[in-house]
Length: 112
Length: 110
Image (cartoon, rainbow over all chains, first blue to last red; front, side):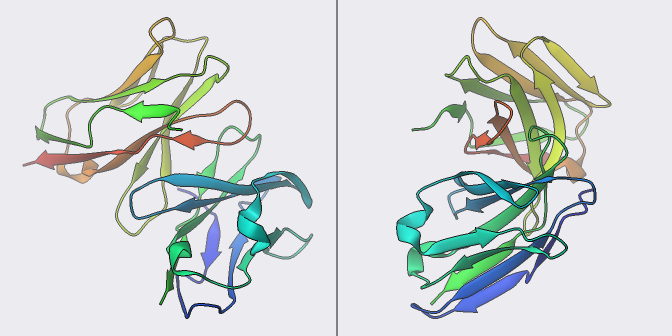
């Protein structure tokens, strides 16, 4: 069973509002990934970190998305100005080696 | 562009039967192929995975058969149980980002 913790489980925001979600990776896993899963079960990779450094990221959707993984603090993903199209399940995964990825339960974001 | 394809959106089997879920991929550069199981309201759980140097991987009731020449793989679930009812995702990775198929929803009827 995955030990990745994600909070909050549910997040409801109005359009234009900030949305922030957090992830605590499994102990000993230096690599963290963020994915978005939409209602059609399509997964979209957003960003990944090794320790605190960004390894790879997508265009970060017009820069509205930002993420960080500070040492000794939870990782976070923030949407600066939420849009209806951002409604999705946001999944954090951690990995000991980049291939084996263990997912948390996700944060379900609803943008009204 | 969908790089990983799962041929069936849904599959129904009877309890005790073997469920076979199929997947195909395009890019030969990928060498790691995991299957994830996802229940409603939960994140995907890593079920079993195979590397492209192997043609078979078994873990309990779950077996992956991998055909590198044909670029396809399948997940066999032996002795299916109602508790196996979930959505199964095939994915591919090359030491980094996972690319997922669109999932197959498996229903195991008692």
